[in-house]
Picture 1 (cartoon, rainbow, N blue to C red):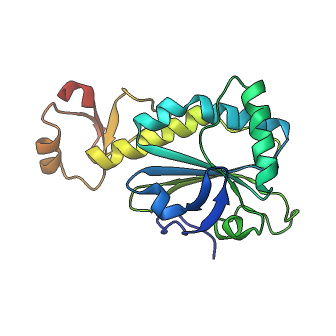
Picture 2 (picture 1 turned 180 degrees about the horizontal axis):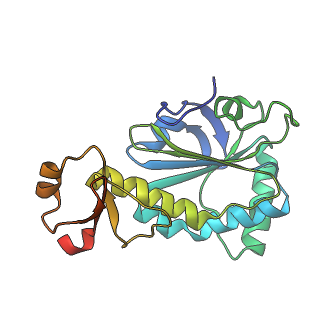
Picture 3 (picture 1 turned 90 degrees about the vertical axis):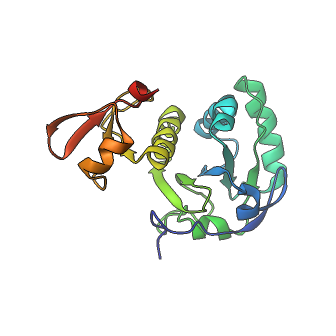
Length: 212
């Protein structure tokens, strides 16, 4: 069965560059981002892991742990991290899982059934503190991921959980959001005393900044 939004993230125990990872235990009460890369010592992946490392303070601000994965062995991971740090002006301080038997990749749908089983696709899975899968993205091998967009998506998920809102197209933190459809006008009046604008009854824009 494919992994779906709302599923409990499959737990696993696997070796990593920071020791044995027991995924659910390792996450604790944090959000988590698990992302796979096709192979060590490849150019796009090198830039991606560097980008994730440079965003370290941003992940920490959002109570989020990041975890990379490929089917390469630990020895390769250790050598590759040295290349990443040297070429990407970064310090990789998050674990790289050595999924040499493909168990984790299989559970998370990170190996396309028609492709080389020794290559994972560029998947991103965001997991919340309840261990529920909240976002799944899959990129082709040739396209580098935009981790600022993944950071934006994480912000939107966390904001929605806190404030019973949804985010419009192209939303960025600090901009107006939408009152969730599950919230009645009476409930909205209590939740958002600053008021909202409604070009239609079902499209209610609210500025959370106005409530501060």
